[in-house]
Structures are given as C-alpha cells and as structure tokens.
Amino acid sequence: MDIIEEIRSRRSVRRFTSEPVSDELIDRILEAGRWAPSGLNNQPWRFAVVKDRELITEISKLTQYDTVVRGAQVLLPVFIATEKIYHREKDIQGIGACLQNMLLEIHSLGLGAVWLGEIIRSNALLKQLLGLVNDLELMAVIALGWPAEKPRTTKRKTLKELIVYRD
Image 1 (cartoon, helix red, strand yellow):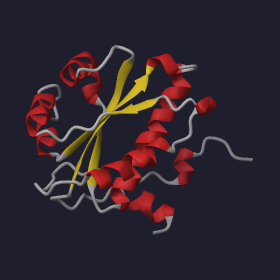
Image 2 (tube, one colour; image 1 turned 45 degrees about the vertical axis):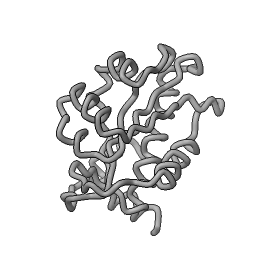
Image 3 (cartoon, helix red, strand yellow; image 1 turned 60 degrees about the vertical axis):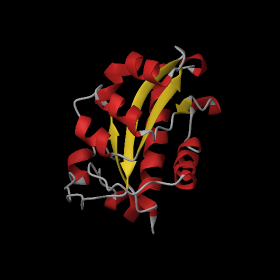
C-alpha cells in the first residue's frame, strides 16, 4: 500500500474480537516503533506488552476508557526513559513518532488500535501494577486487537485552512 493511503485509511478502533494477537505480530509492531526518529538517536522509548486478561482488567480500572481497554487483546504501554532525556519536548515528540509508526504498522497488519492518552494520569499506578521502576514515565497506551468494528470515516481540514505561511 502506498504510504499516503496507509496514513489516510488508518482510524482508531475501539472494539476488538476475542481472537489472540501473536507475539510475532506484536514484535513487528514494536520494531516499527523502535525505528522512529529521535534527537541524538537517544531512542528514549520503552515498551511493555500486556496480554494477561486479569492484568488488562486491572489496568482498565485506571482509565475512563475501561471498556476499550477490557476489550483489547493486547495493551502496549509506551514509556519515556527519563534517564535518557536530553530535551524533554523533543524527546516527547520522538515518542509521538514512535506511537505513529506503531499505529501504522498495526493498521498495515489488518489489526485495529487506539492511542490512549488520558491514562497517563495513572502513571504511578500502572507502573506499580507492572512492577516497573521510577525512571519510566507513561506516555500512552496502545490498545489493540483484531477489529470488531468498521471505523467511521472522518474529514480533515483543507491545506488552505492549515497553512499559516507560504512563500
């Protein structure tokens, strides 16, 4: 698929089937994230992979999107390694690129996913559930699985509405 078509056709999926997602596919998704650009090539992202149903249920209690989380077959919490930060804003932008790479790979594999940001307020509780150290800060959780819905189409603003300066 042409990359622009991949970008244009990707949508958030919030309902999933019960079909499992293989470790091979999960590794492909993480590999896509690993290749995101980062300042000074510091690669500040760190990943957790959660497939255990009981743990997914516990994590669902940390967000208002509990139904989405409970329905996912896999959760991919993405953290920033705080000891690797050299410029906070730039490194957070790198995490955004990492997340986008992962979402595009998920879409290209025929899976569905949604980027959950609201859950970052539960950083400490999520790290506690996962038994993780304090030098990680939650940036997002990707909830994914095989789609049980056809995502709705959305509209975008025109380029004319978005370009603020052009020579």
